[in-house]
Image (cartoon, rainbow, N blue to C red; front, top):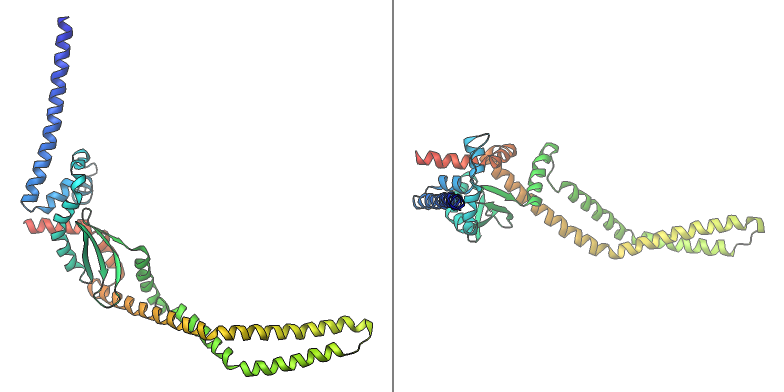
Length: 290
């Protein structure tokens, strides 16, 4: 009986010790984080809220320390942490990306526009906690494609604009040739009437029907062109509006390209900077500490 009680007490002591250490560890983690925030030490805050990323990107440790359990303690206040960290980060991003304009949409949440010109595009959001851009996929692909097309001396919408312009030329020609079609239709109707009234031998009736059908098909084709011509004015107007919108988009993307080239030299350097943004920013914070 005595041995059983001693065993139980020993177990209890061990459990108490383990729990105390766990609680103390969490308290120490929160105290360290609170002090880092108090000291405006953004670098340490980044290390504390995502130890794995910090270890991988900054320390280059193959098997870096991870503190995911303690990091879960502050998951419910991430927007507040993001708001705190955004103060220095957005200032840094303004310097590195002078053509991006940031807007806080909720506590710690930021979206950004490309440019300060009329018609500028919403280009994505900022993940402050991970120091990452989340680009709007469709808008980013347009910009990337525009840089690729430079080698062909084309703009993003060159082909579409050329296609619509040629279509409008064809439709205008269709409208302009209405009188000519009317004359052709009159001749075809007269020919159809003549063929229909022509007396032929029974063995020639098949050939007569074929001749008549060819004339009817030609008349049907001209009638279809007439119907298309009737809608041509509206189609031309719609195409012109589309061409105008595409041209405006090309102009805006042109501004974006100029901005990137002016700051980074080329699109490849811009992309490279985006990939190393976390590492570069933490390095900037470390340099500021010194």
